[in-house]
Length: 118
Length: 111
Image: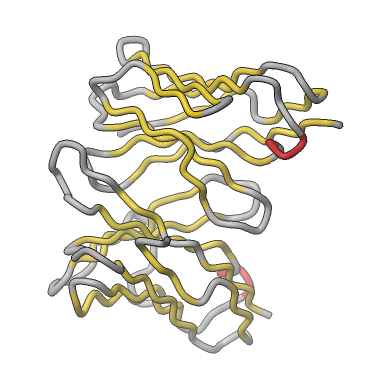
């Protein structure tokens, strides 16, 4: 079964509204989670690193105020796309390392979320 | 900064053929290398994970190799089937943190 759960898997929202995507680690604590974005026919690109109890670290070119990341607990990180526009339509996926930095560490991915802004 | 490339970008083969997908990376100081499969409109499916100390991994008809010195990994698919049609991504594990993904190879296996 899934070790990292992501919800919703698909969402359609109107332009100008906000949408929240959740990423949960189901049977382990994740102090760090990663958010990726994939535009059509392109590769997955790291957007930001979500850190439990502190601010997220954003990659260059990613707008902090548009893509709000909250990591309020050791098992949950949320990505909120604020004032969504059609160009934000994309595939968003999270990942969480089970034993970060340790040999044999396994990184689990969520199922991904398809966002369509109309 | 790690850069990952994949060749070919797209591949179309008749059913039953053996094929090789290539992945190249610029920084050999990697933790793990992982091959994923992505079906259209779907998420990622992990296929094979090769730890930095390993040279290859096998699962069924799939075999992945890793040569850190040359910065290359290959995914070998034996006796391809139409159900193998998907995009295949290789990714470097940045010391147990984030992944750096290649652009992918879009595979079509024709019946």
